[in-house]
Amino acid sequence: MSLKCANKTLCGALFALNFASFAHAQFGRGGGDWMAIGGDAQRSAAVKTDPHISPESVQAGVMQTLWKIKLNGVPTPPVVGSRLITYKGFKDLLYVATSADNVVSIDHVMGKVFWESHLPYDSLLVPVKNGTATCPAGMTAALSLAVPLAPPTPGAGRGRGAAPGPGRGNMAAAPVPTLPRPRRTPGAVYALSSDGLIHTLNQNTGTDIAPAFRFIRGNAKAHDLISVANVVYAVTSDNCGGTPNAVWSINLEDTLVSEWKTGDASVLGLAFGSDGTVYATTSKGIAALEQKTLKVKQLEDSESATPPLVFKFKDKEYVVAANVHGHILVRDPASLAIVVNVPGNGSGIGNALASWEEAESKTRWILATKGSSVVAFKVVEDGGSIALQQGWTSREMVSPAAPIVVNGVVFVLSSGSRTAPAVLCALDGITGKELWNSGKAIGSYSTTGISSGASKVFVGTHDGTLYAFGYLLNRE
Image (cartoon, rainbow, N blue to C red; front, side, top):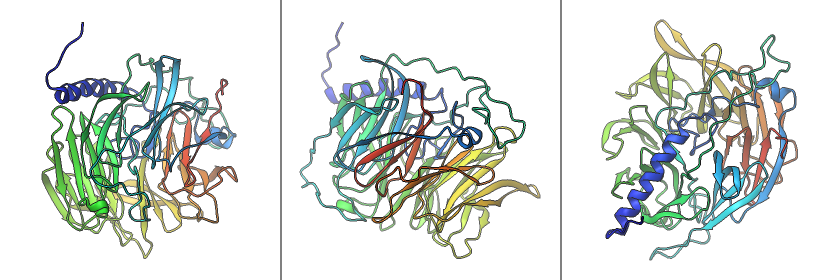
């Protein structure tokens, strides 16, 4: 039975809502999918558990160069969905946007394009063809799946060790994990095209689930796209394309757009508290915003240098970000008062932070790029208060990208330069010991960072190539 609708825009929004709700439920069950920039709503940049990647297995040789694929345009870090039932059978798919306004779905087991959609430019503004380092041309925001507000619960019994191997004493191998149930109904992939429209695409086909809606001004430098609880968020920076610096949201139920403009302060990024509070860092401060309206709940001056990250320690949430002087500042989420200040000692901190928790000891770690190295801090209790205790420091790298963590393995990309290609490195999350690197497998430098999912790590390079490294399944 078909249902006619007089208001196509409203029906399209409700249709998107239904798909978004389904995807929200599905992606809340696992722990291995990478759903948006930073991996999850808290921006932890961590995959809690993985059936194949662990410090022991990486040291034993599990990491391999799997495939590379050339795309039209510079790729953003992919988002990853797994165990989909499609018209071609079971598929494990990743989704990647490129600067050419293309959205590409790749069967990440086979390393082959599953579908590709070009998002046509639809704006009265003339599209920018030749960008700059500050204001790049084309599509700049990574894609998003529907992200649950609360962190996913790790699967039972997986632990740290995914395979037996040296390096951790008498640690036993984790039992073989049970795969999640395949998803019979496709979810949504959210894409923000260079003309400022928000697109809701079918995960299985790349076709529009609902009409594209006007979200922001075209030719903006947009990033941090994320869909949480049927609201899609993005930020704009550096006044590119005449778009004001701001945090934006669009409610998929009624397509109402809200904004929080920041004047001449560029927005660095977003993270979410478990109560739905939106935390945003700018070049001049940090703000706590209401989830849907983006009204300011709290605002503190701080010349931030990184996006925020929300983490839990002893059942209490905290917000952490670094400032331009290299200080790492941990804040109370309600008042934004500083509760920990780790001095920078003259070394600037760039990129995003990452956080993970050891499965056995429940020790919380915070990772940052400091100068040319990655520095790890333990979150500890000192006299009844929270504190950060410096752990290990990695070797120096060429413009290291923001680190990510997969089941206790820290992956960091030495981004390289025009004369030096990028190199992906795997470090033991507890000791900082280098366990593996990609050697000469990557042929160019990178400007976009890395992501993970389904026992793989993905690297995009400036020449439009996407690389996959990780565990080799039998069918690969």
